[in-house]
Image (cartoon, rainbow over all chains, first blue to last red; front, side, top):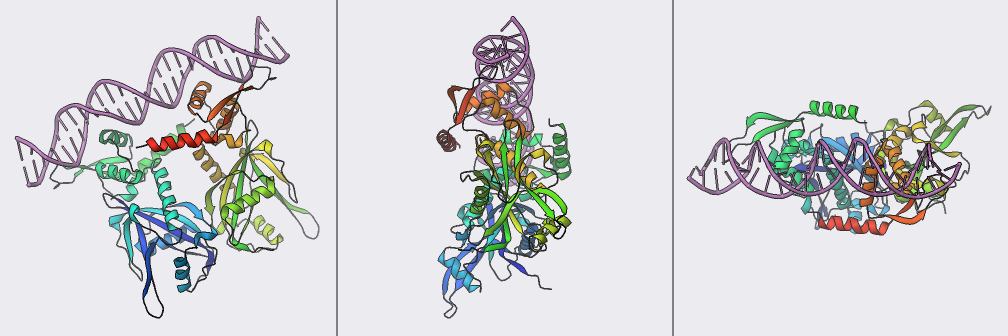
Amino acid sequence: MKRSIHQNISVDCVIFGFDSSELKVLLVERELHDEKTGELIFKDRTLTGNHIYLHEELESAARRILDDLTGIDDIYLEQFFTFGSPSRISKEKDKQWIRSQGRNPDEHIVTVGYFSLLDINRVEIKHKDRNVAWYPVGEVGELGFDHNEILDKALSTLRDKLMKEPLAYELLPDKFTLTQMQTLYQAIMGVEYDKGNFRKKVAKMKYLIPLDEKIVGNAHRPPRLYFFSRDVYEFTRKQLFDFSV
Amino acid sequence: MKRSIHQNISVDCVIFGFDSSELKVLLVERELHDEKTGELIFKDRTLTGNHIYLHEELESAARRILDDLTGIDDIYLEQFFTFGSPSRISKEKDKQWIRSQGRNPDEHIVTVGYFSLLDINRVEIKHKDRNVAWYPVGEVGELGFDHNEILDKALSTLRDKLMKEPLAYELLPDKFTLTQMQTLYQAIMGVEYDKGNFRKKVAKMKYLIPLDEKIVGNAHRPPRLYFFSRDVYEFTRKQLFDFSV
DNA sequence: TCAAAAGTGTTTCAGATACACCCATGT
DNA sequence: ACATGGGTGTATCTGAAACACTTTTGA
């Protein structure tokens, strides 16, 4: 069965990953070749996105894209902003690209931005027909369409949320060390934290549970592993809520 | 010149106002009458919204709605979420209503939510063909479509933003007293604040500038008037930014 | 002169910050 | 034994919160 799509509505996904030192984003390579000569006209990168189907939930459309790309279906996902400027497609190369896809570059397409967080090591990126790779968020260069703007907005939303919710575990392995976690916070927030104070804060978060396991073979004192307990988190959140005012 | 519209994309505006004691929202009355008998089938309220034009900025579409309704064109406006569930139009009366407008209730319409803040006394609501009125946010009842959900999301976004930015002045008259401001915060946040502590905080906000003017005739000690200086605000924000790590 | 709202000052307490120090491991 | 990152403890400072108090007006 073939489903019809919304011509004017798409979803773009900003997929963040963390590789133990840097925050990275998943980008798709875009190459335009001359139809006749096969000569390369340009080569750059874009976020991953797609049109939504008629009668499809926005979030489902985003999950569909993520699943296609990563094969994982339980990824953290969050809508952050909708971009609908008519000048979203204004650069000449974007128009060329759209024409090469048999589509009309003068269409006015509104796109709903989602960002997702995942442990970079969980994923074996599916190549399919296009090249997909991780890029440090600070070194993405000029992306296609308005995707630099979309990435920036995703990043600032991520920073805001990270200050309010313990999202770090979404980007880290199931078991992680506090140094990994601190590095992650520093990479995303762009600031340095005091080790002692950072750990004191974590100690107050009862949903970050220390294990007896340790990592050995580091040529240093082996660090303790922690994991995030969703149960405890939900429970303490409810408690907080109940007693507020 | 007639502009074509996007069939599947609309903008909904949650317009907040404050009347010196309560937070209110602007709603449009919706009445459906039987075509033949003229008998009233139902009567309820909805937010204000409309389809966007092809090649129109989302924010412009929202401003167009606001301007039509209030005649004011410099209103604070902020996108907060996009609603695209295919079940947005599922209640029978919503379908009836849409049919009565000559439209198809099975269309899948994605709507971008904006909320705006304005001094309730600035506005002389234009009636046009429909009844428009202010309702306390806690007493809106069951709205049409998914508009209760949209209103809730707008409210929680407003609360979040109010904790980070001095938005209060958007809802207050140009000159306002600190008691008015405190009442506003309490109305929106749903908590009580200590008078002394509230004023201490305000004293630290250099962009809230006390005037020599006072309001007389209150049968009490006349309160001092304050106003919000955007210039000072921008300046101190930049300063803060410059010195942050 | 009294009621009521405007406005100020003081004390206390929790949490943030800075920073010094000890611990465990591989080389 | 020592370098290095892991991990803990303590002193200080800031700001939030609680609350008592004074001031100014109209009635």
